[in-house]
Image (cartoon, rainbow, N blue to C red; front, side):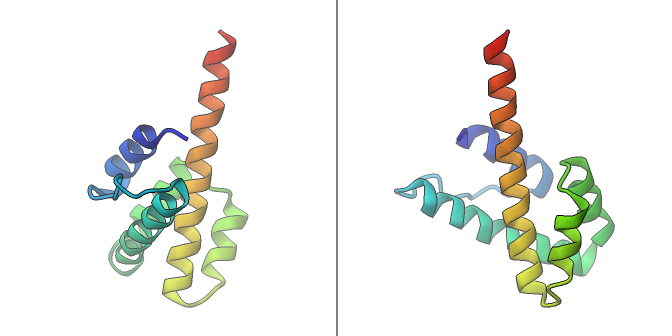
Length: 104
């Protein structure tokens, strides 16, 4: 995983800055990022849902995954699921990019 690329993406799209890069394990780091991102997603759900939906579309989170998250009903569960899906999707894109440039 490229912490730098993931951090850059989250900073640019969600205005997240303190992502705890000093955490000891990758799992702890990803869990911390998910929690911080979920807080920001909750904010967007409450104040600017259109912006959140645009970001989800832009980063290509599958519609069925977005729909499934919103069907959870409770805002905390929705935001945590969306944060998870955003992180997973972004990590996939980073890996695809690495593989693509490796072939060239």
